[in-house]
Length: 349
Ligand SMILES: Cc1ncc(COP(=O)(O)O)c(C=O)c1O
Image (cartoon, rainbow, N blue to C red):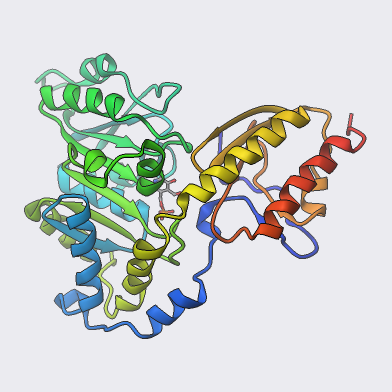
């Protein structure tokens, strides 16, 4: 399943864009914070806003240091490059972003092998399969070095118990532990736990600011000082050393202060939408945190959705519908109405 294939673009006004929570635009208050940001040259370590953002996330997640980077992909890549050398291996879930959607960057750029494990119904990995995937000390094999988990995964908030069991298995085998927390705060919100409860057992955590949190750009990798120093060096090597990046970090700081608590609204709306689709009998529906997945009945004329101003991903076979802060009250009402019209329309078949 690809979450990036697009369906028809609405020909008229877009009333609600449900493709992803990455489509949000900075709100006026965030733009003001960006315009007023104190800045300096971050490659020299002089940008006070970047330094504040890195320190704030490191402190929240209980880590020594943070590193501001342009994207979640770069954050995960830097983590893998910092943890692993050439000929070493990352173990992760087969549907995880690091395996499926990052163009095998760790392999291409770092000579790192990627070992994909089946992912459970809850988005977690099986501890026995983790143990079995770790290679013997034998010159035929790569050296297993890092276990990379993901939370949320396809919207699913993986329970702390499940995460803990995977961590225990990884640690017992001598692996380092990374969390792709692109939607870390959606996970925290759904699990009802503290940041530290999820982040605590990992060496490094990557958190995105430009998904449900509404910042235009940016992720922060947090972890131990020495590892982050290596990641900083790699960031420069990849051309990711930014200068007056404080204008971007200010958006991240604003997002952390104002947009974490409201994620619950996105989750509630996703639940409402899922119930609506289910009641309408449109197909198979699942929902977790801010995402709804609809595998539509074959006879539906899905072109009704863009015709009514919905920008949606193509079904593959499920259609991913993502709730976020840029969907207004009226936009959400229009989403519900468009699906009602889909159910009432004469089928395509
Ligand atoms: C789970 C997960 N990890 C990492 C990323 C990469 O983030 P970016 O698009 O900022 O590179 C995404 C993007 O959607 C994601 O969903």
